[in-house]
Length: 194
Image (tube, rainbow, N blue to C red; front, side, top):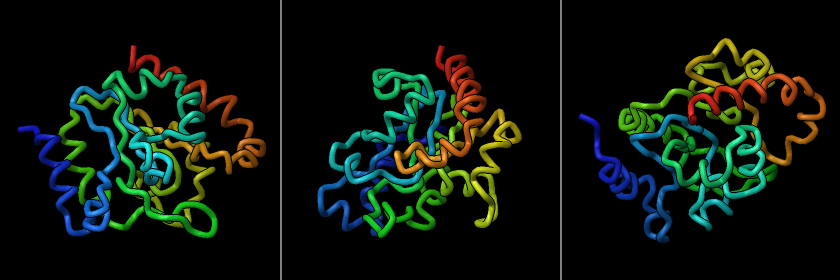
């Protein structure tokens, strides 16, 4: 039997680990739908996403949608795209950007949510945290190498670098990414969502 998504949501909010967020009126931010065909697993919501209650609602999200060749309506309203960050709450800011997602969070909640979404055909892993966790990679593994060899992880996973504006230098240094990887990603996403 597929678990009720509303029940899982309530349990996440009631979890003592998330108490400070719940007491502040902050709900977990993720999108799960039993009909979803495409799953995006990223780091954790940014401050802007948490405040607006909309995942990937920032320049990184705009770039991610352009990489997928998916418009905002399809991304947010079609029910075909699910988003499970490695943590469902903004972890705070550090010296060089947002703090990492809390350890053990995804391990605790993802399996139950994934079981409730049996139609996922492709999981897009965005950034190092999601990629290393789901592909069981060593911490020392270079994300560039993983993304360059993305075909090794298909048809289940498609690893990507983070679409953050901070990665502009990386994109310039690695033109193969937008020339070769993105067209393949777009073709696969188009086929799944059509």
